[in-house]
Image (cartoon, rainbow, N blue to C red; front, side, top):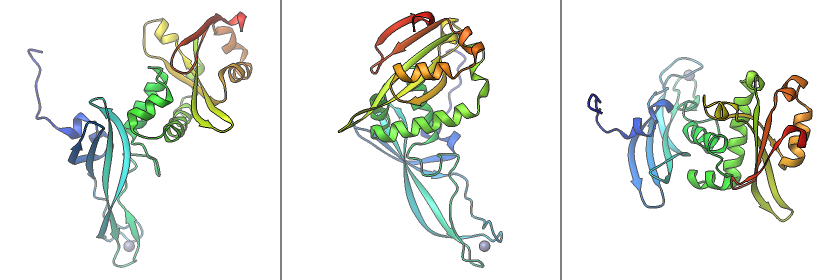
Length: 247
Ligand SMILES: [Zn+2]
């Protein structure tokens, strides 16, 4: 640490909000959680239709669950400007797609934290929801959607997979029983000591039935490459580690 250079303390960079195009303007911290008031850095004041500069009409707030800091949920309260164009009367909101998907209740940082928690750290959906300060249903739907978005953009993920982890997460209690999602993870980089676990797939349903069908749907080349499959159940307990021939 002798040669370390220090910058001034700054909540925006510490909470990685600069990456989301946000700047912290205020904070409210309690034992239960932290609320960070933010503004969107880019003004976005020009009308898309006619190019005229809009007038600020008012400000609305959008609440986003962010990655937890200091062992407590961190919520962003983003102040979003609404503009009105004089010449064409168009009304719009400041663009905040860098911070979150449209209509999402989680920031991009919160989503990334949740996905790493699920895939790499084997956290339960309950623990992820607690970390984000949101309900289990919200946490699960957001993580499923983000997982699928990332999976679609990575078709090469099935290459050279040798060790698979299968996680089963129960996430919703209903009158008719629990809802489950099965998360299939590539543990080859962990076994080889070259990197963290990677997400392969997320499929609704219980792991026993879902994984069998899932494996049958893969290519013979992929199936032949699999050496070990480890199955974990909710709570991260190791249920069984079996060779493929025992499945
Ligand atoms: Zn206009």
